[in-house]
Structures are given as C-alpha cells and as structure tokens.
Length: 138
Image (cartoon, rainbow, N blue to C red):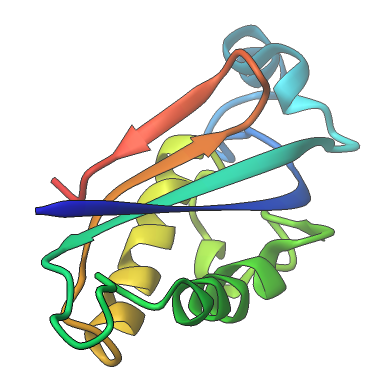
C-alpha cells in the first residue's frame, strides 16, 4: 500500500458559538474564538490517499487530478470565506476544526470515488502551527 499526500493552503474566518448558550457561557467555553466579530486562520489541509500504483502509470493517483479535486471541491468554497456564513456545507454546524474536517472528508471521499481507485486515508487540518486535527473517516 502506498500513501500519497497533497498539501493545500487557504484562509478563512469563523466563530465558535453555541446559539443555545448565553454570550457569557460562549466566552467562558470558547474564549476569544467566540468573538462576535469573528477571527481567522491561515489553514493548511493535508490530504492523504492510499492505494496500489497503477502498473501503466506508476501512480496511486495523478497528483494533478488530486490537486484539482481538492481545489474545486474544498478550497474554492472556503478560501477567504467565513465558515459560519459563506460555506454551504458548514451551514448550521459548529465551525470547529473537528466538525470542519469531518465535512471535508465527506466531500473528498465522494469526489475521489468518481475518478480513482485510490481511497481517502487521512485528512490533517492545521488551524495554527501548534493546533491541528487528524481524521480517518471513522
């Protein structure tokens, strides 16, 4: 089994906020991330796919094809956007990195299925250089 990685970068704003809670409780739980005027990050998304190399090309997946899928299905929808307001697949969901990465998984898993024998293995989303989440579709 061979694992292929692709890194993409995007910028986005969000707010961590539970509408069922008071402003005070949101500030207590989420701190500055509950800022009513939003806050932003320079995100890094690492997409890992796995599979056996094709005997004719030697590729698990053509990295240009993988990059195009990630850009079309995710980056173009989230880059320089507000995750809470502008991103359709995040509507009505908590804009935490944990929920965000799970929604990205659903999108990429479907898109890959249509073009490749490769399977999505892992997503890693860096919110800051110190904070990141991993997701394996489980």
